[in-house]
Image 1 (cartoon, helix red, strand yellow):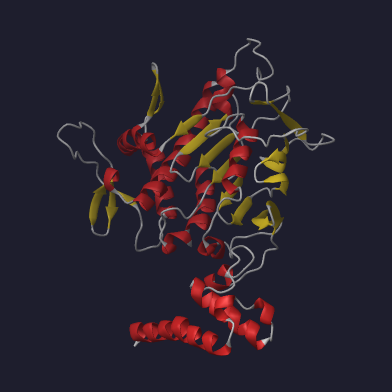
Image 2 (cartoon, helix red, strand yellow):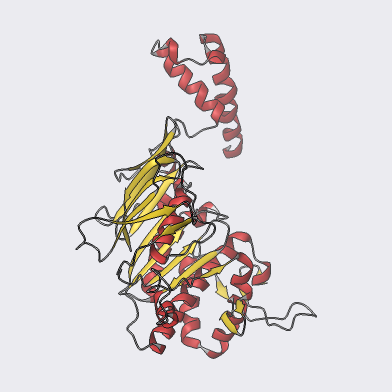
Length: 416
């Protein structure tokens, strides 16, 4: 688990520093300010691999890029550990740090892919060959794209993962205990009691495809998982890989004769991607409950990004200030700063929209926001705050009628 991260001369600012809470860390802020970038670096620090391309440092005379970090179990150190960048080799350099194992790490990426790193599997793959400073660490991780989550991954003569389609059917008919766990996870992640995701009977759907395809039992009938919506596909993918990763970790731990980890780190980019508001307001609390289904004693750290006020609203009954945190990415002049936002229950999604996490002045259209802000500036006699297009009483009044009265009439028509 990661506790501290400090970056110098990489990313959208000359320096960035953040302290992570032990359980839940929510990253908010506009697009392009570095939320995904931070999660990529967190993954790198935890696993020594990159989920995609390595992050690039800033360049210039006298610039020395650094990644400083502190993980759980390092408190005895006098200062965070430091990674430096070699321009000559184009690589980030690790010293032979004797770090504690990181257990299990899952990174759900915004593109629908998922990366998984398992300390137990890496332990089994280490050799006694001295191959430099990384000899104590394997670089093995499994990177799934949206397709091979369903179809599996094979490498040479080994099967890395059977994939959701084959494992689902195998669990359903041969591993009842595992399938019951998977079914329970799907039920917990369902958006509401009227739309519970229940596995149906597998079916064959194509003449030239001999596989039995799992189905989902929806209110209007059974739907093959190959034909479900993008939102449900992402939820099924995450449910499957969480169950699969934990089950694989237990199997690997048994094979190498060691105790399973008690730590699980989840990096989750854009929680709300493809999800309807009903799902947005239930997903994060459900995810916290899923962990208890896998193993009640697991210590879990989640670092998740979101642009959805409903995601934060959903956490009002779950958030604990002692072990949870909101980190907001803000553009200040020409660089990005990361600031912790004190936790305050907003009570309503509209209030969340105008909170520090999302920064809207009004939870309305952009034109309506400009007109209302202009009207308030006019009443304060703050002439300098008036935009050029809204600089007189008559123009402001006319614009308010256009953007607000029409909306009110439309709303009355819908409700009346």
